[in-house]
Length: 516
Image (tube, rainbow, N blue to C red):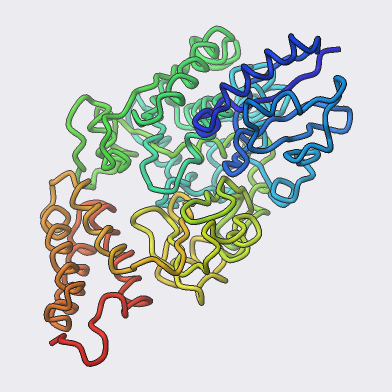
Protein backbone atom coordinates (compact mmCIF):
# COMPACT_ATOMS: atom_id res chain seq x y z
CA UNK A 1 0.00 0.00 0.00
CA UNK A 2 1.26 3.46 -0.86
CA UNK A 3 2.56 5.65 1.97
CA UNK A 4 1.25 9.20 1.90
CA UNK A 5 3.75 11.99 2.54
CA UNK A 6 2.39 15.47 3.24
CA UNK A 7 4.43 18.53 2.26
CA UNK A 8 2.91 22.02 2.70
CA UNK A 9 2.26 24.02 -0.42
CA UNK A 10 1.52 27.37 1.19
CA UNK A 11 3.50 30.58 0.75
CA UNK A 12 5.53 30.31 3.96
CA UNK A 13 6.56 26.69 3.42
CA UNK A 14 7.40 27.27 -0.24
CA UNK A 15 9.56 30.26 0.70
CA UNK A 16 11.48 27.91 3.02
CA UNK A 17 12.16 25.38 0.25
CA UNK A 18 9.14 23.05 0.42
CA UNK A 19 9.04 22.63 -3.35
CA UNK A 20 12.66 21.42 -3.41
CA UNK A 21 11.91 19.05 -0.54
CA UNK A 22 8.89 17.64 -2.39
CA UNK A 23 10.99 16.99 -5.50
CA UNK A 24 13.73 15.38 -3.42
CA UNK A 25 11.25 13.05 -1.68
CA UNK A 26 9.68 12.06 -5.00
CA UNK A 27 13.13 11.30 -6.44
CA UNK A 28 14.14 9.33 -3.34
CA UNK A 29 10.97 7.26 -3.53
CA UNK A 30 11.81 6.26 -7.08
CA UNK A 31 15.48 5.48 -6.42
CA UNK A 32 14.75 3.54 -3.21
CA UNK A 33 11.80 1.66 -4.68
CA UNK A 34 9.36 3.15 -2.16
CA UNK A 35 5.66 3.47 -2.99
CA UNK A 36 5.09 7.08 -1.94
CA UNK A 37 2.14 9.36 -2.66
CA UNK A 38 2.98 13.01 -2.16
CA UNK A 39 0.14 15.26 -0.99
CA UNK A 40 0.71 19.02 -1.13
CA UNK A 41 -1.37 20.04 1.86
CA UNK A 42 -1.83 23.48 3.36
CA UNK A 43 0.21 24.62 6.34
CA UNK A 44 -0.66 23.73 9.93
CA UNK A 45 0.52 27.23 10.79
CA UNK A 46 3.78 26.25 12.50
CA UNK A 47 5.99 28.66 10.57
CA UNK A 48 8.87 27.85 12.89
CA UNK A 49 8.87 24.23 11.65
CA UNK A 50 8.59 24.82 7.91
CA UNK A 51 9.04 22.90 5.77
CA UNK A 52 7.13 20.44 7.95
CA UNK A 53 7.07 17.01 6.32
CA UNK A 54 4.53 14.48 7.60
CA UNK A 55 4.49 10.76 6.87
CA UNK A 56 1.29 8.79 7.37
CA UNK A 57 1.74 5.78 9.68
CA UNK A 58 -0.53 3.42 11.60
CA UNK A 59 0.11 5.53 14.73
CA UNK A 60 -0.74 8.81 13.01
CA UNK A 61 1.10 11.37 10.93
CA UNK A 62 4.74 11.54 12.01
CA UNK A 63 6.36 14.92 11.47
CA UNK A 64 9.82 16.13 10.59
CA UNK A 65 10.51 19.84 11.11
CA UNK A 66 12.71 22.17 9.06
CA UNK A 67 13.58 19.46 6.53
CA UNK A 68 16.25 20.31 3.96
CA UNK A 69 16.42 18.60 0.53
CA UNK A 70 19.76 16.95 1.27
CA UNK A 71 18.28 15.30 4.39
CA UNK A 72 15.43 13.54 2.59
CA UNK A 73 17.28 10.23 2.13
CA UNK A 74 17.64 9.86 5.91
CA UNK A 75 13.92 10.22 6.68
CA UNK A 76 13.43 6.55 5.79
CA UNK A 77 15.40 3.52 6.97
CA UNK A 78 14.83 0.29 5.06
CA UNK A 79 11.58 1.67 3.75
CA UNK A 80 10.27 2.66 7.20
CA UNK A 81 9.91 6.07 8.84
CA UNK A 82 13.09 6.96 10.73
CA UNK A 83 11.71 7.77 14.17
CA UNK A 84 15.25 8.27 15.51
CA UNK A 85 15.96 11.12 13.09
CA UNK A 86 17.11 14.37 14.71
CA UNK A 87 14.27 16.26 13.03
CA UNK A 88 11.55 13.79 14.01
CA UNK A 89 8.78 15.37 16.09
CA UNK A 90 6.82 12.18 16.66
CA UNK A 91 3.08 12.12 15.95
CA UNK A 92 2.28 15.71 15.06
CA UNK A 93 -1.14 15.79 16.74
CA UNK A 94 0.53 14.78 20.02
CA UNK A 95 3.18 17.48 19.88
CA UNK A 96 2.52 20.07 22.66
CA UNK A 97 2.47 23.01 20.23
CA UNK A 98 -0.44 21.46 18.32
CA UNK A 99 -2.13 19.49 21.12
CA UNK A 100 -2.39 22.63 23.28
CA UNK A 101 -4.58 24.42 20.76
CA UNK A 102 -8.35 24.21 20.29
CA UNK A 103 -8.81 24.49 16.57
CA UNK A 104 -12.22 25.08 15.07
CA UNK A 105 -11.78 27.47 12.14
CA UNK A 106 -8.37 25.96 11.32
CA UNK A 107 -9.13 22.36 12.23
CA UNK A 108 -8.58 21.19 8.62
CA UNK A 109 -5.60 23.43 7.86
CA UNK A 110 -2.62 21.26 7.08
CA UNK A 111 -4.64 18.04 7.22
CA UNK A 112 -6.31 18.04 3.81
CA UNK A 113 -5.53 18.61 0.18
CA UNK A 114 -6.76 22.22 -0.10
CA UNK A 115 -8.23 21.76 -3.57
CA UNK A 116 -9.97 18.45 -2.97
CA UNK A 117 -13.66 19.08 -2.34
CA UNK A 118 -14.09 15.41 -1.40
CA UNK A 119 -11.33 15.73 1.19
CA UNK A 120 -12.97 18.90 2.52
CA UNK A 121 -16.32 17.16 2.91
CA UNK A 122 -14.79 14.05 4.53
CA UNK A 123 -13.35 16.30 7.22
CA UNK A 124 -16.65 17.99 8.08
CA UNK A 125 -16.91 20.55 5.30
CA UNK A 126 -20.31 21.55 3.82
CA UNK A 127 -22.18 20.57 7.01
CA UNK A 128 -22.88 24.23 7.68
CA UNK A 129 -24.25 25.08 4.25
CA UNK A 130 -26.32 21.88 4.13
CA UNK A 131 -28.00 22.87 7.38
CA UNK A 132 -28.36 26.49 6.22
CA UNK A 133 -30.24 25.26 3.13
CA UNK A 134 -32.92 23.87 5.45
CA UNK A 135 -33.37 27.20 7.27
CA UNK A 136 -34.87 30.56 6.41
CA UNK A 137 -32.69 33.64 6.19
CA UNK A 138 -34.08 34.83 9.51
CA UNK A 139 -33.23 31.50 11.16
CA UNK A 140 -29.66 31.59 9.84
CA UNK A 141 -29.21 35.13 11.16
CA UNK A 142 -30.69 34.11 14.52
CA UNK A 143 -28.15 31.29 14.82
CA UNK A 144 -25.25 33.62 13.99
CA UNK A 145 -26.61 36.15 16.50
CA UNK A 146 -26.87 33.47 19.20
CA UNK A 147 -23.27 32.45 18.56
CA UNK A 148 -22.01 35.92 19.44
CA UNK A 149 -19.70 35.80 16.41
CA UNK A 150 -18.01 39.17 15.92
CA UNK A 151 -15.99 40.53 13.04
CA UNK A 152 -12.55 38.96 13.10
CA UNK A 153 -11.02 41.63 10.88
CA UNK A 154 -10.49 44.01 13.78
CA UNK A 155 -13.68 45.98 14.31
CA UNK A 156 -15.33 43.14 16.29
CA UNK A 157 -18.83 44.22 15.23
CA UNK A 158 -21.48 41.51 15.87
CA UNK A 159 -21.94 39.56 12.63
CA UNK A 160 -25.57 38.74 13.40
CA UNK A 161 -26.53 42.42 13.63
CA UNK A 162 -24.75 43.24 10.37
CA UNK A 163 -26.34 40.31 8.54
CA UNK A 164 -29.81 41.14 9.87
CA UNK A 165 -29.47 44.76 8.76
CA UNK A 166 -28.68 43.63 5.22
CA UNK A 167 -31.44 41.00 5.31
CA UNK A 168 -34.05 43.59 6.25
CA UNK A 169 -32.73 46.31 3.94
CA UNK A 170 -34.86 47.31 0.98
CA UNK A 171 -33.59 46.23 -2.42
CA UNK A 172 -33.79 43.29 -4.78
CA UNK A 173 -30.02 43.07 -5.32
CA UNK A 174 -27.66 42.44 -2.41
CA UNK A 175 -24.03 41.41 -2.19
CA UNK A 176 -21.61 39.52 0.02
CA UNK A 177 -18.07 40.91 0.04
CA UNK A 178 -15.14 39.16 1.67
CA UNK A 179 -12.38 41.47 2.86
CA UNK A 180 -9.17 39.49 2.25
CA UNK A 181 -6.96 42.58 2.00
CA UNK A 182 -4.84 41.42 4.92
CA UNK A 183 -2.34 44.27 5.25
CA UNK A 184 -1.55 44.46 8.97
CA UNK A 185 2.04 43.70 9.91
CA UNK A 186 2.40 40.39 11.73
CA UNK A 187 -0.84 38.92 10.38
CA UNK A 188 -1.23 36.02 8.00
CA UNK A 189 -4.32 34.08 9.12
CA UNK A 190 -6.40 35.05 6.08
CA UNK A 191 -3.70 33.92 3.69
CA UNK A 192 -3.10 30.69 5.57
CA UNK A 193 -6.80 29.78 5.57
CA UNK A 194 -7.25 30.55 1.88
CA UNK A 195 -4.20 28.49 0.95
CA UNK A 196 -5.04 25.61 3.33
CA UNK A 197 -8.86 25.44 3.32
CA UNK A 198 -10.34 27.64 0.55
CA UNK A 199 -13.70 25.85 0.36
CA UNK A 200 -14.43 26.93 3.93
CA UNK A 201 -14.39 30.57 2.80
CA UNK A 202 -16.56 29.76 -0.19
CA UNK A 203 -19.01 27.89 2.05
CA UNK A 204 -19.13 30.81 4.50
CA UNK A 205 -19.94 33.24 1.71
CA UNK A 206 -22.76 31.02 0.48
CA UNK A 207 -24.20 30.88 4.01
CA UNK A 208 -24.07 34.69 4.24
CA UNK A 209 -25.80 34.90 0.88
CA UNK A 210 -28.56 32.55 2.01
CA UNK A 211 -28.99 34.60 5.19
CA UNK A 212 -29.42 37.98 3.53
CA UNK A 213 -30.83 37.07 0.13
CA UNK A 214 -27.70 37.77 -1.93
CA UNK A 215 -26.86 35.82 -5.07
CA UNK A 216 -23.36 37.14 -5.69
CA UNK A 217 -20.18 37.44 -3.68
CA UNK A 218 -16.78 39.03 -4.23
CA UNK A 219 -13.49 38.21 -2.56
CA UNK A 220 -11.20 41.24 -2.46
CA UNK A 221 -7.79 39.58 -2.15
CA UNK A 222 -4.57 41.55 -1.80
CA UNK A 223 -2.21 41.52 -4.77
CA UNK A 224 0.75 40.67 -2.53
CA UNK A 225 -0.65 37.14 -2.10
CA UNK A 226 -0.13 35.62 -5.59
CA UNK A 227 -0.26 32.00 -4.43
CA UNK A 228 -3.44 32.58 -2.41
CA UNK A 229 -5.00 34.16 -5.50
CA UNK A 230 -4.10 31.10 -7.57
CA UNK A 231 -5.42 28.61 -4.99
CA UNK A 232 -8.70 30.45 -4.43
CA UNK A 233 -9.41 30.91 -8.12
CA UNK A 234 -8.76 27.21 -8.68
CA UNK A 235 -11.08 26.35 -5.79
CA UNK A 236 -13.84 28.60 -7.16
CA UNK A 237 -13.59 26.94 -10.57
CA UNK A 238 -13.83 23.49 -9.01
CA UNK A 239 -16.75 24.60 -6.83
CA UNK A 240 -18.66 25.57 -9.97
CA UNK A 241 -17.86 22.23 -11.59
CA UNK A 242 -19.07 20.37 -8.51
CA UNK A 243 -22.31 22.37 -8.29
CA UNK A 244 -21.44 24.08 -5.02
CA UNK A 245 -21.59 27.41 -6.85
CA UNK A 246 -23.74 28.46 -9.75
CA UNK A 247 -27.42 28.22 -10.68
CA UNK A 248 -28.45 26.01 -7.74
CA UNK A 249 -26.22 25.58 -4.69
CA UNK A 250 -25.66 21.82 -4.23
CA UNK A 251 -28.53 21.25 -6.64
CA UNK A 252 -31.20 22.38 -4.18
CA UNK A 253 -30.47 25.97 -3.17
CA UNK A 254 -30.78 29.32 -4.91
CA UNK A 255 -28.11 30.76 -7.16
CA UNK A 256 -24.83 31.97 -5.73
CA UNK A 257 -21.77 33.15 -7.62
CA UNK A 258 -18.31 34.06 -6.35
CA UNK A 259 -15.70 36.18 -8.10
CA UNK A 260 -12.14 36.82 -6.95
CA UNK A 261 -10.95 40.40 -7.37
CA UNK A 262 -7.30 41.36 -6.81
CA UNK A 263 -6.53 44.45 -4.73
CA UNK A 264 -4.48 47.40 -5.93
CA UNK A 265 -1.78 47.31 -3.24
CA UNK A 266 -3.16 50.01 -0.94
CA UNK A 267 -3.39 49.40 2.83
CA UNK A 268 -6.38 51.74 3.04
CA UNK A 269 -8.43 49.30 0.94
CA UNK A 270 -8.64 47.11 4.02
CA UNK A 271 -11.12 49.72 5.25
CA UNK A 272 -14.52 48.54 4.12
CA UNK A 273 -15.71 51.64 2.26
CA UNK A 274 -12.39 52.18 0.48
CA UNK A 275 -12.55 48.51 -0.49
CA UNK A 276 -15.99 49.09 -2.03
CA UNK A 277 -14.65 52.04 -4.01
CA UNK A 278 -11.82 49.87 -5.34
CA UNK A 279 -14.23 47.04 -6.20
CA UNK A 280 -16.25 49.51 -8.24
CA UNK A 281 -13.14 50.42 -10.22
CA UNK A 282 -12.44 53.70 -8.46
CA UNK A 283 -9.51 54.98 -6.41
CA UNK A 284 -9.51 53.48 -2.93
CA UNK A 285 -10.76 56.40 -0.87
CA UNK A 286 -12.78 56.22 2.33
CA UNK A 287 -16.48 57.01 2.13
CA UNK A 288 -18.24 59.06 4.77
CA UNK A 289 -20.73 57.11 6.90
CA UNK A 290 -23.73 57.11 7.00
CA UNK A 291 -24.99 55.52 4.86
CA UNK A 292 -23.59 52.25 6.15
CA UNK A 293 -22.50 49.64 3.57
CA UNK A 294 -25.14 47.33 5.03
CA UNK A 295 -27.74 49.72 3.60
CA UNK A 296 -25.88 51.23 0.66
CA UNK A 297 -22.73 49.36 -0.17
CA UNK A 298 -21.39 47.86 -3.40
CA UNK A 299 -22.93 49.60 -6.44
CA UNK A 300 -25.32 51.30 -4.02
CA UNK A 301 -26.88 48.02 -2.86
CA UNK A 302 -27.13 46.50 0.65
CA UNK A 303 -23.88 44.64 1.27
CA UNK A 304 -22.45 42.26 3.85
CA UNK A 305 -18.73 42.95 4.27
CA UNK A 306 -16.89 40.49 6.47
CA UNK A 307 -13.33 39.36 6.97
CA UNK A 308 -12.11 35.93 5.79
CA UNK A 309 -12.07 34.54 9.33
CA UNK A 310 -15.59 35.77 10.12
CA UNK A 311 -17.09 34.06 7.09
CA UNK A 312 -15.05 30.91 7.74
CA UNK A 313 -16.25 30.81 11.36
CA UNK A 314 -19.86 31.08 10.18
CA UNK A 315 -19.56 27.58 8.69
CA UNK A 316 -18.79 26.19 12.15
CA UNK A 317 -21.62 28.18 13.71
CA UNK A 318 -24.16 26.72 11.30
CA UNK A 319 -22.73 23.21 11.47
CA UNK A 320 -22.78 22.92 15.26
CA UNK A 321 -25.35 25.55 16.22
CA UNK A 322 -24.92 29.04 17.62
CA UNK A 323 -25.25 28.02 21.26
CA UNK A 324 -22.40 25.54 21.05
CA UNK A 325 -20.10 28.15 19.51
CA UNK A 326 -21.10 30.72 22.14
CA UNK A 327 -20.08 28.31 24.92
CA UNK A 328 -16.44 28.97 24.06
CA UNK A 329 -14.57 32.14 24.96
CA UNK A 330 -14.90 34.84 27.60
CA UNK A 331 -17.97 37.00 28.20
CA UNK A 332 -18.93 38.71 24.89
CA UNK A 333 -15.80 37.43 23.17
CA UNK A 334 -17.20 34.09 22.06
CA UNK A 335 -15.68 31.26 20.07
CA UNK A 336 -12.02 31.00 19.14
CA UNK A 337 -9.46 33.38 17.67
CA UNK A 338 -6.46 32.56 15.48
CA UNK A 339 -3.56 34.43 17.10
CA UNK A 340 -0.55 35.03 14.88
CA UNK A 341 2.85 35.11 16.59
CA UNK A 342 5.52 37.18 14.83
CA UNK A 343 8.41 39.53 15.41
CA UNK A 344 11.23 38.58 17.77
CA UNK A 345 9.74 35.20 18.68
CA UNK A 346 11.26 31.74 18.64
CA UNK A 347 8.21 29.75 17.56
CA UNK A 348 6.30 31.99 15.20
CA UNK A 349 3.06 30.82 13.64
CA UNK A 350 -0.70 30.60 14.03
CA UNK A 351 -2.24 29.45 17.30
CA UNK A 352 -6.04 29.04 17.57
CA UNK A 353 -7.51 29.22 21.07
CA UNK A 354 -10.76 30.26 22.74
CA UNK A 355 -10.82 33.89 23.82
CA UNK A 356 -9.68 34.38 27.41
CA UNK A 357 -6.15 33.01 27.51
CA UNK A 358 -3.62 35.59 28.70
CA UNK A 359 -1.22 37.26 26.30
CA UNK A 360 1.66 36.03 28.43
CA UNK A 361 0.61 32.38 28.25
CA UNK A 362 0.27 32.46 24.46
CA UNK A 363 3.65 34.15 23.94
CA UNK A 364 5.51 31.99 26.45
CA UNK A 365 3.81 28.60 25.98
CA UNK A 366 3.48 28.71 22.22
CA UNK A 367 5.96 31.39 21.17
CA UNK A 368 8.79 30.08 23.31
CA UNK A 369 9.92 33.62 24.24
CA UNK A 370 12.27 35.73 22.08
CA UNK A 371 14.31 34.41 19.19
CA UNK A 372 17.26 36.58 20.26
CA UNK A 373 17.28 35.05 23.73
CA UNK A 374 17.00 38.48 25.31
CA UNK A 375 14.11 39.50 27.59
CA UNK A 376 10.99 40.76 25.84
CA UNK A 377 10.20 44.39 26.52
CA UNK A 378 7.05 45.16 24.51
CA UNK A 379 4.36 43.27 22.64
CA UNK A 380 2.16 44.93 20.02
CA UNK A 381 -1.22 43.31 19.49
CA UNK A 382 -3.58 44.25 16.69
CA UNK A 383 -1.32 45.26 13.82
CA UNK A 384 0.52 48.55 13.18
CA UNK A 385 -2.33 50.50 14.81
CA UNK A 386 -2.31 48.40 17.97
CA UNK A 387 -0.95 49.42 21.37
CA UNK A 388 2.49 48.45 22.65
CA UNK A 389 2.01 46.59 25.91
CA UNK A 390 4.63 46.48 28.68
CA UNK A 391 5.29 43.39 30.81
CA UNK A 392 2.85 44.29 33.60
CA UNK A 393 -0.08 44.08 31.13
CA UNK A 394 0.81 40.71 29.61
CA UNK A 395 -1.56 38.87 31.96
CA UNK A 396 -4.52 40.62 30.29
CA UNK A 397 -6.96 38.06 28.84
CA UNK A 398 -7.04 37.98 25.06
CA UNK A 399 -10.62 39.20 24.72
CA UNK A 400 -12.12 42.32 23.16
CA UNK A 401 -13.41 43.99 26.33
CA UNK A 402 -10.36 43.05 28.40
CA UNK A 403 -8.00 44.66 25.91
CA UNK A 404 -10.18 47.74 25.53
CA UNK A 405 -10.07 48.20 29.31
CA UNK A 406 -6.26 48.59 29.22
CA UNK A 407 -6.24 50.93 26.22
CA UNK A 408 -5.46 48.28 23.63
CA UNK A 409 -7.22 46.26 20.92
CA UNK A 410 -7.10 42.72 19.58
CA UNK A 411 -7.61 43.70 15.96
CA UNK A 412 -6.93 40.84 13.58
CA UNK A 413 -5.09 38.83 16.23
CA UNK A 414 -1.54 39.69 15.23
CA UNK A 415 1.00 39.54 18.08
CA UNK A 416 4.41 41.11 17.39
CA UNK A 417 7.15 40.81 20.01
CA UNK A 418 10.12 43.11 20.72
CA UNK A 419 13.08 42.40 22.99
CA UNK A 420 14.81 44.86 25.33
CA UNK A 421 16.91 46.40 22.55
CA UNK A 422 13.88 48.10 20.98
CA UNK A 423 13.70 51.89 20.85
CA UNK A 424 10.05 52.65 21.61
CA UNK A 425 10.38 56.25 20.44
CA UNK A 426 11.29 54.85 17.04
CA UNK A 427 8.19 52.65 17.14
CA UNK A 428 5.99 55.65 17.94
CA UNK A 429 7.46 57.52 15.00
CA UNK A 430 6.90 54.49 12.78
CA UNK A 431 3.17 54.49 13.64
CA UNK A 432 2.77 58.07 12.46
CA UNK A 433 4.96 57.50 9.40
CA UNK A 434 2.92 54.43 8.47
CA UNK A 435 -0.29 56.44 8.61
CA UNK A 436 1.23 59.26 6.53
CA UNK A 437 2.33 56.77 3.88
CA UNK A 438 -0.93 54.81 3.74
CA UNK A 439 -3.48 57.61 4.16
CA UNK A 440 -5.97 57.95 1.31
CA UNK A 441 -5.70 61.72 1.78
CA UNK A 442 -9.42 62.43 2.05
CA UNK A 443 -9.52 63.86 5.56
CA UNK A 444 -7.20 66.49 7.02
CA UNK A 445 -6.62 64.96 10.49
CA UNK A 446 -5.21 61.78 8.95
CA UNK A 447 -3.43 63.29 5.92
CA UNK A 448 -1.81 66.26 7.66
CA UNK A 449 -1.93 65.09 11.26
CA UNK A 450 0.19 62.02 10.64
CA UNK A 451 2.84 64.06 8.80
CA UNK A 452 2.98 66.62 11.60
CA UNK A 453 3.02 63.73 14.08
CA UNK A 454 6.23 62.38 12.57
CA UNK A 455 7.81 65.82 12.89
CA UNK A 456 6.74 66.27 16.51
CA UNK A 457 8.09 62.85 17.52
CA UNK A 458 11.35 63.57 15.71
CA UNK A 459 11.72 66.76 17.74
CA UNK A 460 11.00 64.80 20.90
CA UNK A 461 13.66 62.26 19.96
CA UNK A 462 16.13 65.13 19.48
CA UNK A 463 15.18 66.42 22.97
CA UNK A 464 14.02 69.68 21.38
CA UNK A 465 11.60 71.51 23.70
CA UNK A 466 10.39 68.18 25.05
CA UNK A 467 7.59 69.42 27.29
CA UNK A 468 6.10 71.65 24.62
CA UNK A 469 6.31 68.93 21.97
CA UNK A 470 4.78 66.40 24.37
CA UNK A 471 1.72 68.63 24.86
CA UNK A 472 1.47 69.21 21.11
CA UNK A 473 1.60 65.45 20.48
CA UNK A 474 -1.21 64.86 22.97
CA UNK A 475 -3.39 67.47 21.26
CA UNK A 476 -2.56 66.10 17.82
CA UNK A 477 -3.52 62.55 18.87
CA UNK A 478 -6.84 63.80 20.19
CA UNK A 479 -7.57 65.64 16.94
CA UNK A 480 -6.79 62.53 14.87
CA UNK A 481 -8.93 60.29 17.09
CA UNK A 482 -11.96 62.56 16.96
CA UNK A 483 -11.69 64.03 13.47
CA UNK A 484 -10.55 61.21 11.19
CA UNK A 485 -13.06 59.62 8.83
CA UNK A 486 -11.89 56.05 9.34
CA UNK A 487 -9.89 53.81 11.65
CA UNK A 488 -6.53 54.48 9.97
CA UNK A 489 -6.33 58.05 11.25
CA UNK A 490 -8.51 57.36 14.28
CA UNK A 491 -6.40 54.49 15.58
CA UNK A 492 -2.90 55.70 14.70
CA UNK A 493 -2.73 57.56 18.05
CA UNK A 494 -3.26 54.25 19.90
CA UNK A 495 0.32 52.93 19.54
CA UNK A 496 1.69 56.45 20.04
CA UNK A 497 -0.28 56.96 23.25
CA UNK A 498 0.81 53.55 24.51
CA UNK A 499 4.44 54.59 24.12
CA UNK A 500 3.70 57.89 25.88
CA UNK A 501 2.01 56.02 28.73
CA UNK A 502 4.22 52.98 29.21
CA UNK A 503 7.58 53.93 27.66
CA UNK A 504 7.74 57.67 28.26
CA UNK A 505 11.43 57.54 29.07
CA UNK A 506 12.20 56.70 25.45
CA UNK A 507 10.52 59.91 24.31
CA UNK A 508 11.33 62.41 27.05
CA UNK A 509 14.65 64.03 27.82
CA UNK A 510 16.50 62.39 30.73
CA UNK A 511 16.59 64.07 34.12
CA UNK A 512 18.77 67.16 33.91
CA UNK A 513 18.33 67.31 30.14
CA UNK A 514 17.45 70.29 27.97
CA UNK A 515 13.70 69.70 27.65
CA UNK A 516 11.63 72.83 28.22
